[in-house]
Length: 265
Image 1 (spheres, one colour):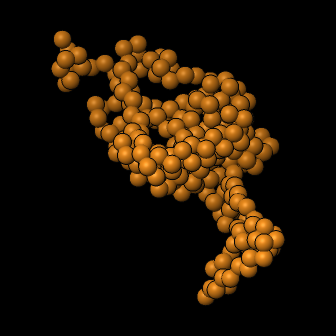
Image 2: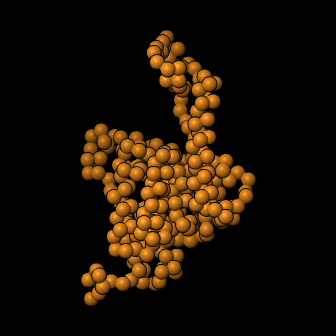
Image 3: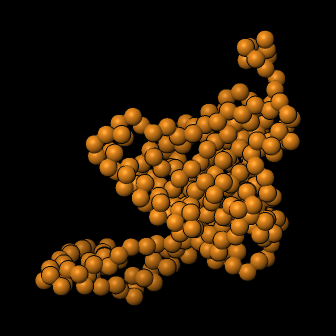
């Protein structure tokens, strides 16, 4: 009978937050602080969980959104006194690893891809294409850096240097986060902060994860065989199935596939 009366149910509870996909602002189908906040808040506050488990599968994305989500998880963990465990499925790379590092302990499958602690920017240059058709690009600015990295104009060395300077600042923030969270667990492997990736056991050896393990058996080993699990995951808006929202979602799906393809997935 006690399972019918919530306040009499004393079996340990683990709240599972599924974080799957590319990290980006502006879309409810992507991982971002705005759409994840209600879900993360519920996971920490409902049912007095013994722990919160992050079930991760992300190739990365926005460093800002990664930082905001990770910071929210840490604040709630400290406020509620609830430990956080991360379990990596296919990949936790770049921003995906930023999220994993928000956990107190990180575990992965022996085939999981982990790491890619770096910053990347990509785009296209169309200046030769438009000149071939006799098209002239006209841009007027107040401020000499206002039109930096315009894809319709030839690439400027000063613009590239400025971009790299910005990337280095973000990279430093990423490295500081990983060092603060992993501490002495980190090894001194070459390439640890160069954007290199590791798989399974090798990721453990360099200190990016704590071990090889899966969510349910590890949580039951930690909190008991009667441990209960409640999973929180993003819900796609009903209107996303129609019209322009459906087209946007389809295009987003192609971008997501391209992001995972960088890691052979």
